[in-house]
Length: 153
Image (cartoon, rainbow, N blue to C red; front, side, top):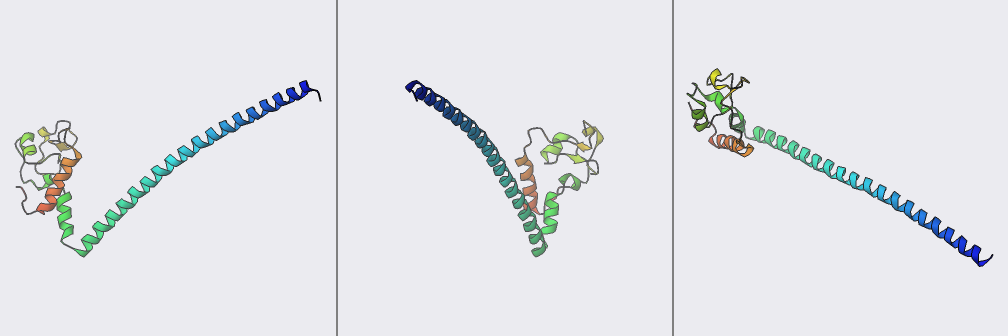
């Protein structure tokens, strides 16, 4: 073999190796992208499963508490019940209802007045848009602690 042929063979061999390295690099990047996606989906799935199991345990705990302590059942029902259903008479305005801690008065309540239902969706004196989930939860918590002892007329 002449030195020119040897040099040509080496160049050709070097190009083939570079081509193989580039192809392997592309395959590795593609495979690692898929692994990232699978890992991300796995984390989301695990979190959803944890949330599901926490919810199941909460339901079981409430059921056991109601079974072991029968006084909890009516107290829990009162805390989660719509407070507007306890009103005996309608309040004069929505501002008065909100000051008294009532909002979203349903059609079945004796406190429901059609003129206080602006959008005619069956709820009078709807809660303010800035009313947060925490505020509504604190109302339920206060009713839980109260246990029905201080029902408003």
